[in-house]
Image (cartoon, rainbow, N blue to C red; front, side):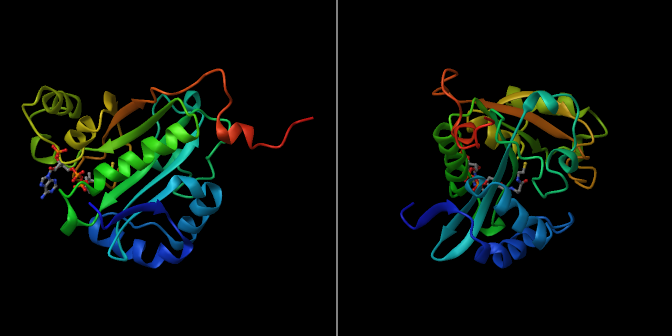
Length: 220
Ligand SMILES: CC(C)(COP(=O)(O)OP(=O)(O)OC[C@H]1O[C@@H](n2cnc3c(N)ncnc32)[C@H](O)[C@@H]1OP(=O)(O)O)[C@@H](O)C(=O)NCCC(=O)NCCS
């Protein structure tokens, strides 16, 4: 798509981004302006936008974490420090996907794919080991009386069901690792639950420090 540009988010994008987020998640509290400002300060390279014809049509925001600190149960609120990304840790090896969304009127045009491609590229550029995310399960609610979220996710993996988010992430080469309970309680469509997913960076070089580690001031 020639007219699609994936680029880092600027402070001047925040107004449009907040408006878009309200349309994407009418039932979920939107980010607060100062939190978005903080995300840009904490980790500017991790905040990606999709722009088409000068309009904001999607975004993918990430931070870097020490995965061992979070690999058991965690919530979106805790791992993102309520959306401020003050949990961003340049020593980490894991790019954590905190959010991705595309304008509801522009879905199915591969904007999500190119945002994920931007994230994979960032992971490679920084020499990080992997990308981890907890993906919403927005198709789960109608099935929740008959099956657990784990059973639902397995049916998506087996191809018996399609989920608007998990099916997309599996096509983007992410692997399903299990259910994160109570991840985002206000997400009614997903019954508050999320699918833990991972993508392994094939180019990760464990003999080199990550770009973020290299940029840290020396402790001597
Ligand atoms: C998940 C999401 C980001 C995907 O964005 P997208 O731009 O539609 O993604 P793509 O176009 O790259 O891929 C969507 C897939 O659905 C298919 N599709 C076709 N028509 C579609 C439509 N009308 N709507 C959505 N997907 C459609 C696409 O062909 C593609 O399938 P493929 O990979 O087999 O080609 C988007 O659905 C979204 O914003 N969802 C709401 C926010 C959300 O829940 N985000 C996840 C947070 S964990």
